[in-house]
Image 1 (tube, rainbow, N blue to C red):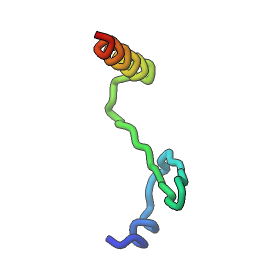
Image 2: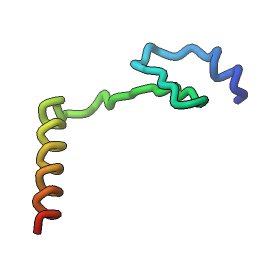
Image 3: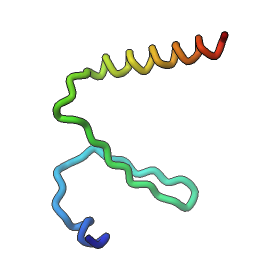
Image 4: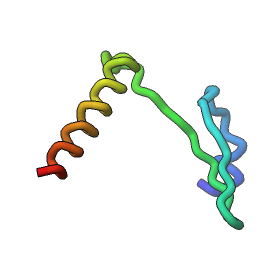
Length: 60
């Protein structure tokens, strides 16, 4: 599939953003699992716990 074919292919709406760094432009598409059972609150708590564990491990 060529770049033009990918650009013109119908795609359902996906959250996305464009970020330019220097002379490079990044087009980032986000996707989420339709079968996930973890809530946003669960994810944030997991990230925070992992960060605390890493900090405590590095303090020893």
